[in-house]
Length: 323
Image (cartoon, rainbow, N blue to C red):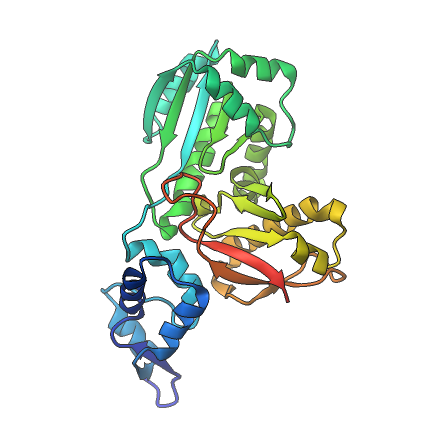
């Protein structure tokens, strides 16, 4: 240890214990300001940075003191009673591709259950279709005539395990799209693509796997009244995004471009968090162009989806506000 080594705070007891106890007492998730106040009021001893790493070695790594709000949302399910997320995929099959899909799924290593034709499922999947390479009439007709569908589910995972699970699903989807399956719907995001779109995602993955995961696994933007939000980032171990029409307007965006701007902003932020997430802290600002106004990110819990819903994001939402 050097005598001029940086001193850093070491909470006693650990910060995750303090946060979990307060959340249990309140009976609800903590807000960003509450998390920061608990962190600021914590009793700490100052230790050299290398000493803090030694203290945590072989034990539960504590919440990042310098980025407590973001790290708590990322890891809170490890310390409180909560639903852990999983990836859920519906695979509709029929015709010549059905036996091939069955063989692929049997060898996938995931939890797979087989179910027979469901008329209501056709409407459900088509309602979730993205606008990327829209399915033609023939593909929609094939979906309506599916004979079997499979529910494929990953094991529940924490944030640090999410990306590996989603990469496995991306490889599975690539194989099923070539089989071909009739349709593939990521229920964890409420999102289905045409087979052409899934193949385009697979081609992108060969060049940039992270970009393919953001593009293929995340529904963006979804509009509800005057807000736009994303759904599916929990499959990548990250919070989703939410922005209001008033914030978009404050950045100089015209109303007719709200949806397009929200989509582009969510995509850029999602890719940034996947590739350089360790640099991100609540309060950081983002902008799409030099001309557009900036937005700042505030972390909060996911409030608009029930916790037992597979689309629920336990890692929170990043609300984007005017700088």
